[in-house]
Amino acid sequence: MPKTITEQNLRLLIDSLIKEGTRVIGPRRTGTITLYEPLARGEELDLNELPRRSAKEVFFPVCENILSFQRGEEGVKVTDIDPCAFPETVLIGARPCDAAAAPVLDSVFSWDYKDEFFLQRRRKTTVIGLACTTADDACFCSAVGLSPADSKGADLFLTPVREGGYLCEALTDKGKTLITSHARLFAETSAAAPLSLNEPAGVKLDLHKIKGWLDENFESPIWKEIADRCAGCGSCAFLCPACHCFDIVDEGTEAEGHRRKFWDACGFGKFTDHASGHNPRDAQPKRYRNRIMHKFKYYDDKFGQTLCTGCGRCIRWCPVGIDIKAVLEEIQKG
Image (cartoon, rainbow, N blue to C red):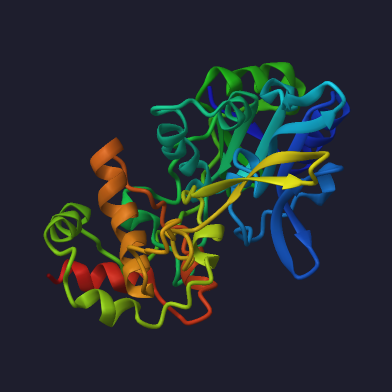
């Protein structure tokens, strides 16, 4: 029989997890925006809107140390950061477009090299997904193979019900364990009626056709028409749940410092700068072309997946108004 949880008990669940020493991250209102942030108590959870930034930061932080170094009398001492030291975490309230991105990223972070910083966070995080009951003009999850009720990437999935509270579907052992260990907060019911889930409107994309066009049109003049106004600010990549470019640098003094991994973006002008001074993507349309190619061709070629979950953040917050849906629709026309 399906499980349900009330709104009050959902917040009590957060309080219980925090008391047990688990780090809980969820949508939290911070000033004028909502962000995925560590919660100090259940009442801080805010499920009224999609957070401004994506949930990928739980697994792939903006910046992280991967080793430290210190020069002493006996030479240079290098100390690795232990990726197993990450705390047990529950990510709660992850919308389908955010939860679905994590298993997409698994492919690249466990491919030719296993990035234990990412993978340990994945292992130690239980994802509680949440179905969407509203969609705005920027949403297009259904156009890239997902839906407002898609549970991909979630260990436990919540669907709002008309009577208040949520239907709970445990999808993995992590989800089942969470319910079992907090059984008093969940109830069994056969009568709960899910709220209607609104599909994003107005976008029909044929991803196979789009990829076919990309396969044949690397040098098309349409790239300049589409992307000449791109400012190269990187906001689309930094807000995206699935973009994952990063750089590694050593920072500090000659005496001590850290090697750090931090976000980068293929839209930045210096992203492909060579030591020789040559830059194979020396103009912004070339860089925007790479963004579209990576998401809808290269990643598919390599891993059989589209590197986009249709969250719409890149549309909402692009400072020059580039709409990736409109770009894809133009490509689809051939």
